[in-house]
Length: 610
Image (spheres, one colour):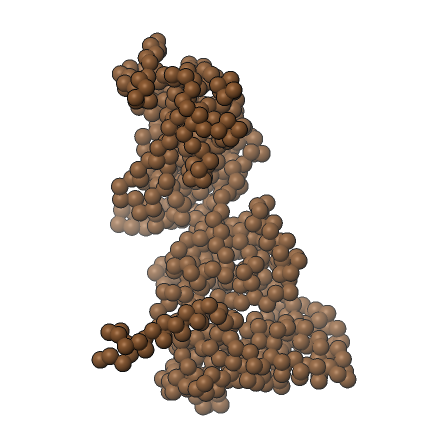
């Protein structure tokens, strides 16, 4: 019977003076209520309050947002029998509540009427239980009795150590919490920064902290920054105890969803945990690289991909502060068969050493739209190389099985919905007509055209085999290719396309310059594969190569093109370079045609109505 399965007396034991540990108590859910979001909250978080009973007593509980799915899925219902797997008892304004981080529904018992007549757990030292009227589960509100506030321990599958018995979940931190300790993993540590304003100068750094219930950003200033900066290391777990101010989060500096943030004080207690085994795992909300065009500019996202290219570290100078910053550009790809450029900064860029074809998960990257979709790792973001998560394992399996031979479409200069004029679709006749307006500053456009001819005189060049280096190499001796930039010899080059193709639509033709990725999309083979066919067979190689170039024609693509007026032999000449090429999406193209056809209807919006 369900009544026999319930852990009777568990609630009084948990909130008793001894704070007795009750391992995985079984209780009955007698009420579920959706909590109203805070007024004015731009991104409200759904929360649920649940009343649980152990037949003798009832207690109000709050479901941690990480466990919301058990309610939203309909699995937890009024009358269900549940087992608490991880929970945290607290006292707030003399009221006992449970914060539930994890629970399971014992579905074999179904949905039952309320078992017994549970009573409110009195917070007085000498409790006097009162019966609960049947028409009101909560009954009369007991008069609060003054008593000293006490912290209660977290009860979970990996209980706190005896030196830190009173743990708070991050999700429960608020300006009203005073004496607390959290056990959290440092998922990101920012660089030490200096600030200057009218009030003076100072320094600060920030860390992101994670436990099983949520994340929070913590910042230290001046003396506290000097004290704690050498203490924190990314990936390690720490105990952090008050005094430490809990304030409203400044969303412009953080990509976390928490409404609050921490400000370390010099007296804040930070201690590295001796047990580093039970680390809270970072939670990701991944966006596919192929879906970036549907993401608004400046949105912060998480993404995971295969590392395809690594550029050298470069330095840029800030126009505002005149300071130098290090940056490095990476190219990521995923099973949407799309790649994207992602920029990392500062020490992260300088120390980056992940090998090519690693699986890298990024948390907190900003979506940019400068001439096309690209990503930038925020200072509050983080990355994990070959993480032990399902999405990374799935991506690794796909890449090893099929992804290595895929020609990836790119987002380079493939403008998104907010790119304005840069996303203008043009006919070839328009491009030719506007050539006289071209200047040194490039303009961008989109073309839908078919390849009619591939110039096959020079289609590729031998490039350096070093990752991130595309310099041309020189064959010194058979089997020895020299890169002047890298000062290294290689047994063979890495060929890269430099195609010149003629494309056409119904209004005219245009010559386009295509580099490696665009060339591979047109030809259907990598430059290495095409040159191998040409060079390995002395008799038929050239003929087979010509056949491949011929078969590359009569294909229709959407081209993202950069147009610029250049000077060649003292003569101005327009140059059209393909920045991105991607196959037709017939559903989207059909929808565009349908919208265009609608404009020919004889209505107020018709093209023919003045």
